[in-house]
Length: 430
Image 1 (cartoon, one colour):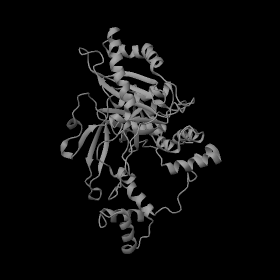
Image 2 (spheres, helix red, strand yellow):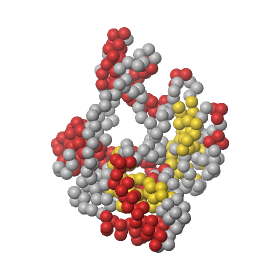
Image 3 (cartoon, one colour):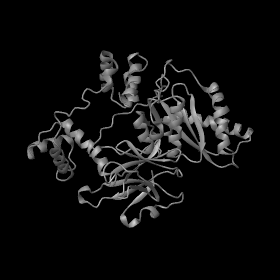
């Protein structure tokens, strides 16, 4: 089973035992209640094997030929632009002789990034969100910038992760800023202390969700943007991200930070602590256990949905990821960084091959080709990647933007020093 299927198994088991409703299980897995009911039925009939997709490895018999798919997309982008799905289906049949089902057409358009002409919004009913019944079903994490060492001390950010079922503070540490690196370190602490949760409830911070409107051609065809560095790690671990649309939606961790700003600031002052390193030792050795003894409560169900992370290469998963091409001299270059690739198969080795370069949380580097480790490099300073956006010059890809992650070689590097403005690029933090 894949990591996603293992995560679904925990949720479906709770629903089958009656600990959560079908609608609650659907929200945890990111599925519709109807699909969740189907999974529940297969689980009751076939057990865990029922959650494995029966078409895995098969080519669909009704799959549209690539030429027909491309023709439809060209018509939608040109002649038949601004038509709703049903009208488009009718004109394709009448004018072009293309017979295609409405749902097939709708799926094709959404995967290619074409949004519906009109979106029907159902009426909203707001109510208090009940706690998750079991540990590991949902973890809430966030960062809180504050003057934790008093008004005279430096401002920094407290990163914290809370189990939604019993308010257990799983991990917390101070860091200068709320960054991608901070969230990857927080995720590593969760995995080491408890395991892999089913879902994580989070806000729309730029380290967690792509908030830019720029789509590459590949993303338009896929129908979704490439996740952030943290999002890629969650996807690889099979963790379902759930985004809050307002600060009030994640009220539990917001109230937690209110409690910490009241209590922790005072305790740090009483302990005479005014720097991040000493404060982090204070949290892990003394404060976290005492806080949980006071504020932790009993979960509704005496079971755990955490999955073991044993056997997974967390050093590889929790890393910054870059795409690159091997030069003719078998080197990979990122900014001013040069990584030498050892000899590989054939006389040319890996020259001109597309590879994935990852910088681990200890600063070291690894180069992978088709999932195989082919090179390592010593540690360099760990810095947030910069996302570069380039306009396509090809008229056929009008409106598309190629997105490239860049490694800043110096902490005060300016965007124009990496990617000159005349090329039409724009650089932002990843």
